Length: 162
View 1 (cartoon, rainbow, N blue to C red):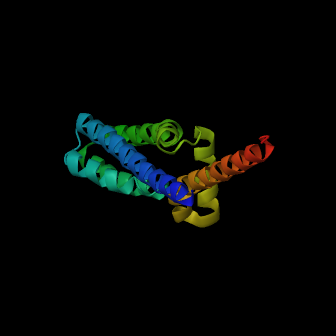
View 2 (cartoon, rainbow, N blue to C red):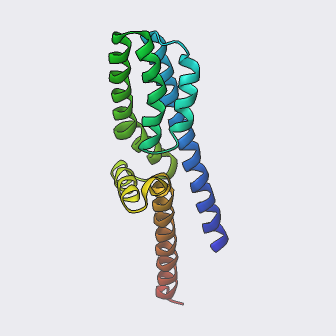
View 3 (cartoon, rainbow, N blue to C red):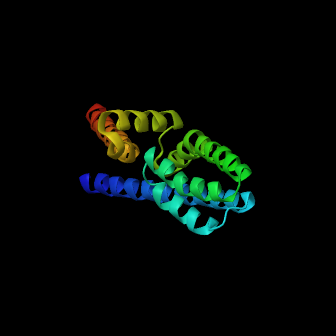
């Protein structure tokens, strides 16, 4: 039975990682597309940079924005303004819509629990806590459900008349 739980936890962490990759890919594609339409040169390397930094909650997107902002400064004032607006829009979309929905699908946590776990994880343990909050909370939920079901099954077995 514990082997089954171990497999579920492993699959849960794999699904979380897949969700993180999907999230980073979506944000990178949105960013690269926006950079292209803004007229920023090097929009593909900038989008790739955004992809990799998307794995670091909070600070990663900020660091990922800096090169695009610098490139926008060398382009035009309009490019600077549009880059800032696009960055804010993508981050709002990612933080409040995409991340909660993708993690719900990936690990089964409600969007509210996802947002709360990332916030609490970052407050208590900093960036590492923010990164690992969702898979840790989803693992705790899995273990809790597993033992609740196991205890319920044992209780039902005891109640069965012979």
